[in-house]
Image (cartoon, rainbow, N blue to C red; front, side, top):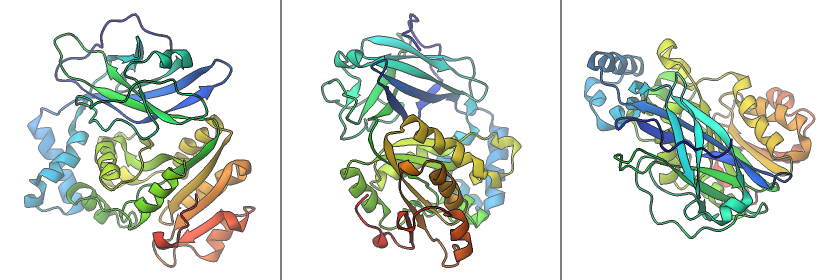
Length: 372
């Protein structure tokens, strides 16, 4: 999308704008980055009756006691589900010396687009480029910290690009977003979340819901150490979760507080008010394939490491993708949550035609090699 002539975003003071970490792809022919932008516009729920009804639904299903439901953690986790999505909000962002239209929110509040950012524009950017050490650590709706001086990002290096929302003059907030710019070559880790890096108990639905809304998230022991070692070796990270976008803030806070490397996120869109609570964390086998395969197509020169677990369909999904793109497969790592989750027949079907040395089954992170 070309630069915008619009002056400011069409949002009001009570509107909340959040961006999700995305990716940028280098286009050699155009000497430019194709940068995805994805966010949501919403407003905190004002209806007390609706709030009580929804919170009551979560409490009943997860058997959360009334005292727990009054807990700050429960309300913090549940509040994004109560927010009112806002449509027809045009978002203008400032990236370098130019304004761009980042999209117009739809009925579900989500907006997005793909921007073309010429490499030459990044050279002149005063506040957009963040070095490969990591993304800005700001909350999406808080003022940013001090950022390093700008520099042109060559296509052979990885880094992060940040932007801010152009707001009406009376609105003093600083709302920021970011995208990870990946070189055409290199290595990427595609990671599942539930029961792969976070203890979730996906197969025990009520415990899963209860843990999501009333208990602190707990990391799978040792996985952050492995991921940090891989990041130090130059790997980029993509987190693909079957959880709905309403949980992004909580999951991103979990990632950061436990020391997992920053990365782009893919999560599920769900009209949850018309669906059973159990569907909040369940996805069809096509869901992950449809999220992951475009990454391989966008980066044909990169090698991919797939990390998942045995509780749902990760072996089958990863095996199917690996057979279609064998030249991009660096390895598949599957955490066996229960000893009998991966019988030989299942493994044979899931990983048929894939070289055995590319498949790694583990129960504990200590079994993993630190070489990515």
